[in-house]
Length: 356
Image (tube, rainbow, N blue to C red; front, top):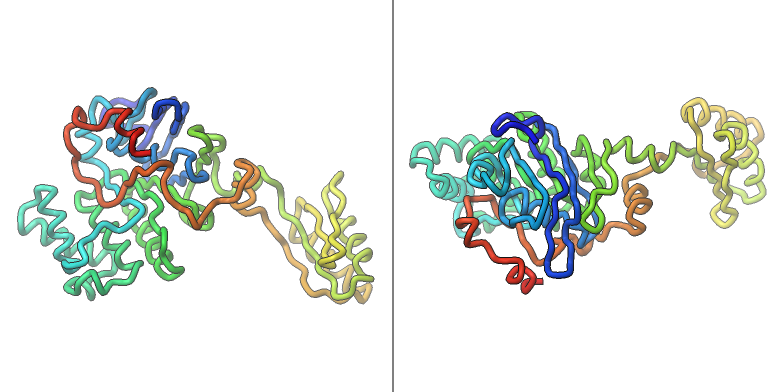
């Protein structure tokens, strides 16, 4: 582990465990997040993602193992951790009756900022998150994306070193998701470290510098998005012919460029053939020339690369359940973090288990 206040990693967990009676929500979970990066945490429902976030943000005590955030132990130095983090949960926790500005000023006062500093910080965040024009409008009239941006702004009142985002775009339309993504990129550009849990794999692909896949409370993979995809397989060329009689010609053309020991695959019903290739661009152009020279009419010819969906399926044996994006348990991380009650008053494992 790192010296207190001088972290090598913004987030560092070793053999982290959380047990609810006979259920292990985390079972030896490890994590190392470099400062100034976006780190994606992926896993099916019940894998342990939200439990990990709650422990790392000091909202839940671990059963075993160690974890540091910003160089401070989450068990022995929780107040130091809380001074350095922000937390935005699965649903925006802003007050619809208040305006955007009033929400941020209120959060600022709750964080013990004086009246004028709270107003200055609110103005800075409204500008940063593109909400200045709507600052004095009631939040009730905000779009989903605007509410999430306001929620992110509230979590940044104290300019945290580390920001936890638990399913930040759940329920948003594509425009709202893009708005949140742009806001996250801006935060990281300013030096904030972000731990992102999500079930939207395209979100992790676009935002994360590195991704960990968690299953049954353990980390089962950890790499860059590109590295995870390469572990599934290299690029493939796919050919769809217009006439079924031309499928053998497409298979033969692909056999010339396919990787050694990896013959083309054919799907007669779809009139499709595909093959893995190591050097995709020359292989693609060569296949196109060959088929054109033979007079083969094509409906489609393209290069297909592995997706994170395929990585997720290969590693966990199931596809992400986007419709049920939620927590591992009925634990919520809604709203920007404030310093919670004294850790001694936190519920025991038995009481927590009763919530399940």
